[in-house]
Amino acid sequence: MKKEGTTLGLTVSGGIDKDGKPRVSNLRQGGIAARSDQLDVGDYIKAVNGINLAKFRHDEIISLLKNVGERVVLEVEYELPPVSVQGSSVMFRTVEVTLHKEGNTFGFVIRGGAHDDRNKSRPVVITCVRPGGPADREGTIKPGDRLLSVDGIRLLGSTHAEAMSILKQCGQEATLLIEYDVSVMGM
Image (tube, rainbow, N blue to C red):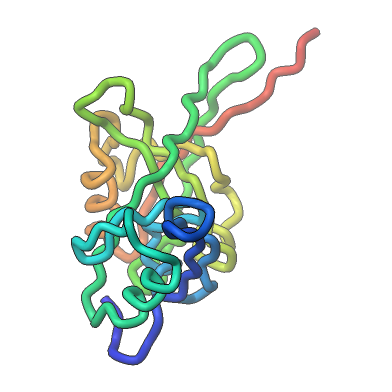
């Protein structure tokens, strides 16, 4: 949601006349798009309010985004995060982190989650920690970390939408269980 006369705070590159599919090339710090915690640089924008962008020129995409109105629904496509494997050189560790929401956000983007296609199922992974946001200021959470639970609600088997909903519906303060990789040096 954006107010009339304001921008989304994102820069888009690409279009049918440019270097391919439209994608987010920048997110303005503090902008609506960055604060949504749902977009990341590199995400492809497939549609705006149901309008498919596949045949749009760059200038048409920019014009559409500028004149989109107050309710904006972006359909995005993104690369799935790689799957971490515990083995001889990597061990998993967990840590509990308590964060306070700021403007209904913890300041990170998640990807992954359960999917009907098992090949597309991933743990819920933090792909971006917004500079200056609550998670960044706390300092523990890093991109690539896995979000295992929110206030004791386990996310294993949750879809991306379910995990987002749990994050949005929890209180102003939440305890997150984070799993991260630790490199093990050979002896």
